[in-house]
Image 1 (cartoon, rainbow, N blue to C red):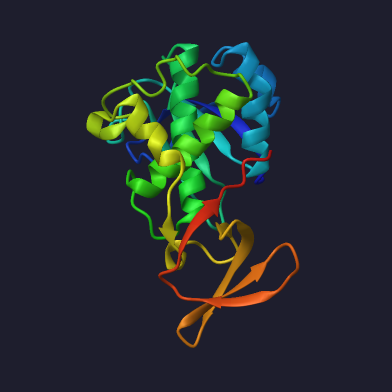
Image 2 (image 1 turned 180 degrees about the vertical axis):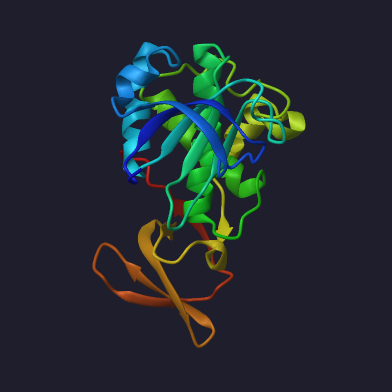
Length: 227
């Protein structure tokens, strides 16, 4: 299989939750939109298709009994030489399927921006809230929806709506951000470079000037939410 984005319907596979030991593939469907119609709200289809295509993600639709060791609804697996993969159970209603997809996609954004981040820490919530806010602004979901009120494995620690929204803006140390990613500092946009003699070389996008900033400089990451 090539590395283009696709939807894969798994009929069954071994307990390896990363899908490396697949027993049987029922269908590979490269017509992404048609394949996702039964699973997603109509107004989210084009957005999700574009998101999958941006990073050549393999979306695996999995029988409800197959994912045993991962959280109850979904899983994200990133690859370096192989494609990124998202696994979602096939027995979810359309709104819940979209919730789970956005949660797993936020893991991808966290991986791309914060190479040393854990699974569900501050960096993840930052990326997740930025992603949800994008869907709010595009009117794909409404701000009075249950996206922030879902408890259990999807959103940890039973955070309130306001608590999670507060994470949309936050400061991070420059040293925690992936090399070549963008960030905002003093109302200017920069690209993070590599460390040099105890400082980090950064390029200001407006005029390509080079700055050498301290690793502990507080900055705000700029996520790539254009697909």
